[in-house]
Image (cartoon, rainbow over all chains, first blue to last red; front, side):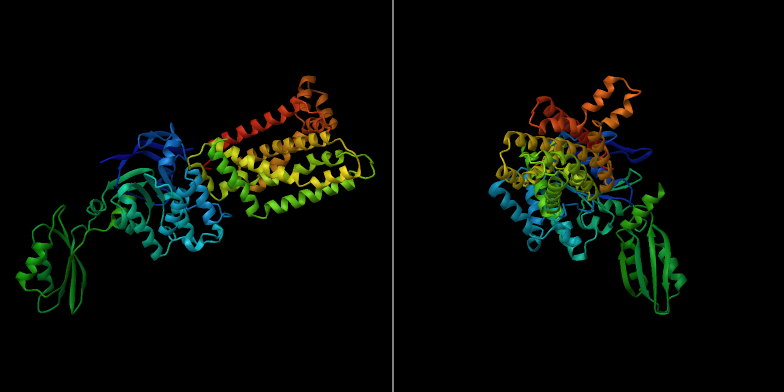
Amino acid sequence: METKVEIKQLCKQFGLLTAVDNISFQVNKGEVLGFLGPNGAGKSTTMKMITGFLTPTAGTVTIDGYDITKQPLEVKRRIGYLPEGAPAYPDMTTADFLDFIAAIRGLSGTKKRQRIADIVTQVNLNNVLHQPIETLSKGFKRRVGLAQAILHDPEVLILDEPTDGLDPNQKHEVRSLIKNMAQEKVIILSTHILEEVDAVCSRAIIISNGKILADGTPNELEAKSKYHNAVTITLRNSTHNQVEIRQALLDVSNVHKLETIEETAQTMTYQIYPKPNCSIVADISHCAREKQWEVIELHAEKGHLDEVFRTVTTQS
Amino acid sequence: MSHNLWVVFRRELSSYFATPIAYVFIIIFLFLSGIFTFYLGNFFLRGQSDLLPFFSFHPWLYLFLIPALAMRLWAEERKSSTIELLLTLPITITDAVLGKFLAAWIFTAIALILTFPIWISVNYLGNPDNAVIFAGYLGSFLMAGAFLSIGSCMSAVTKNQVIAFVITVVVCLAFILSGFPMVLDFFSGWLPQVVIETISSFSFLTHFSAISKGVIDLRDILFFFSLMAFWLFATAILIEMKKAD
């Protein structure tokens, strides 16, 4: 696979504050990398350094072989960037603004008109083309920002909180847009919405206090959760003795712990945690069948990303 | 002129006309220059067919009009965060600084050109030396550029337009007053003559009045251009240094 973005020992110091502390990672073509982290973790600062807005205190950013501090223009040509809050010139109309960006990106003539028309359809801006940007709703503004970022079909797309402040429909639209572009590009996006990582990212990096705390596919991160492979079982409360059932569940091989979620006259719900790296769902279902329990519900958890996020970011 | 400088210039200039700024500025400029010329400058009573009273008020008119025009150059980009957009586009700082400055400068040129009725009047009423009038326009244009370059630099320092405005007025005032006897007298007691001459040589008034009297001296023109170069260079450095603040 082709490495497009290479970040080595990147640091950024603001006075005494270390905003980004020795971050290194690589992103290959076709990857959608989600940058996760609490507010103030250093996500935006890192993105600002990748796009050449901030100069790193130390370390290097290389895009497609070009170093951002040595050949900034070559790098900036290859990047499409949606800064936080999707800033755009408020007094310009959408059409004028996109025309300005296209001109700066070196497009002209019919090619420019064609490209702008394509993008406008793609992000659904036809109705607001001749409105000043300051009169647009938050959702439209975000889409104008997105249109601006993808106008020149960049190899690397950097999106700082692309769905922040959008309603669920708009979020869905933006996500499918990102997914459709993912194949030919490198996309790095920051978010603190965890469902977004599951929805669009092929890889996620959790960052807090300027350091990378975890790096992996969403599945790999979920596997770090204590809920990973945990089994939730709900049984009808017939003649069986509750203590007996709990003991039987604990006796299943590789079971680490059992938590009672609810025990009523009608039903009983338990959560059963496996020992590390074990799957217990088959054994538990086997046990239930053997003992002829009336199973109402039985499912295995993938793991909770938000729980992993909390554990990882509060530990440090 | 690089392609990107031209694109920035075009956007910037049209943004003046997309907002009321352009119209308010031009109307007030024309209105005030009219008042100054006809009432304070005794245009008719002097009985001379030249535009000296018109031009002699320009430094004072520019003192508060140009900072109002220049204050938004960078402060507004900072405030609306568009600076992050602009400076991550594939353009150089030079393109951005020069493009914005030139747009503001050409805009003042437009305002200046719109004072043409006064030129027509004076030609209708008498027989002025149009070469001198042309020199006056040239001097005024150059002085406007110098004011703007100072304003551009002050606007780069802060995201607060009011602060940018006030500092620009103060700095510009210093450049106007540095040729005044009362300022020079203040220094003459305790500073060597060379320093005083240097101070007075920085005065806009000295250079402007020379040009507006029809004496186009290369040194006066060079003075304004090097002043603009200095302040624009300072703008670029300041933007580069504190673009994210």
